[in-house]
Length: 210
Image 1 (spheres, rainbow, N blue to C red):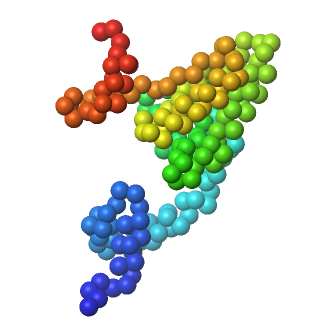
Image 2 (cartoon, helix red, strand yellow):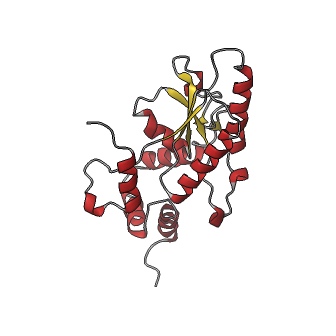
Image 3 (tube, one colour):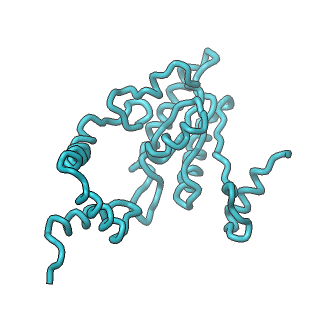
């Protein structure tokens, strides 16, 4: 016997497709919306329908933006000699909270052979072309890219992507270009007994004088 109306069941199904949302949470969200006014529901629906219409990818860093270049790339106070390579635009939101003052390059994912994603499916050729171009332009002047910061996730795929990029950049043989990897270790409030071997190893490697 069908208990819920089709419209309610359908919305629960759509919410459940979102990452991190299970059937119970999807149901709670749906029934919460039932308590809202028609105006609130209409505003919510219009926001969902219209949110992608004005969005595009920045022509320089591939962050999501309404105008290209994006506000970060247009910011003249930022250090254009430092490029942070990230997986997705959401990573930029997190990194901006750290006070980082360089620019970014969004890959659009990570290398994952099991999912059929290779280097050619990401924006790896774009960052390599940018490095090569800037190196040629700065050959006779003290400018250009000085550091590439690899900030992919500390997962197997993220590590593989970082290693691949580092090897490709090394082929350019640019002595003045430094390639770094963000440190990984124990989170604040974490317990040693619950940390995995890789995390503990990274924490030891990234230790510094106290």
